[in-house]
Image (cartoon, rainbow, N blue to C red; front, top):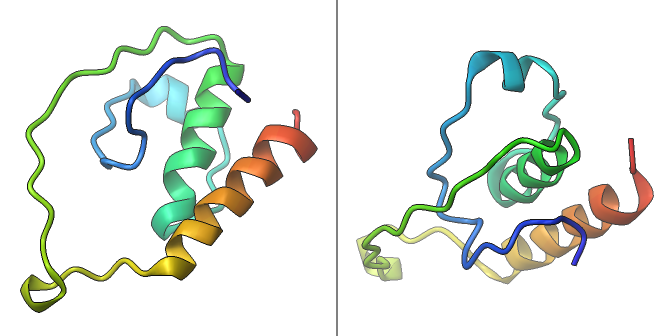
Length: 88
């Protein structure tokens, strides 16, 4: 919706970029805000991005899962923040 990529899941944390690309963006977010910020900023550079399928097995809270509902709201906030309001 805010980018020209069609990803199935941007929150997997597997990203690989050339250093020159990362030098062009200023990353401010952390935790679950990092993924949407980087994805949106990279999309504005018109870089070719490929999604590679991975196998993922989620952990339970007893196994160390740390995500909660606040992380989901933070990710949505960051998508709106960088997708709509910070167009440059």
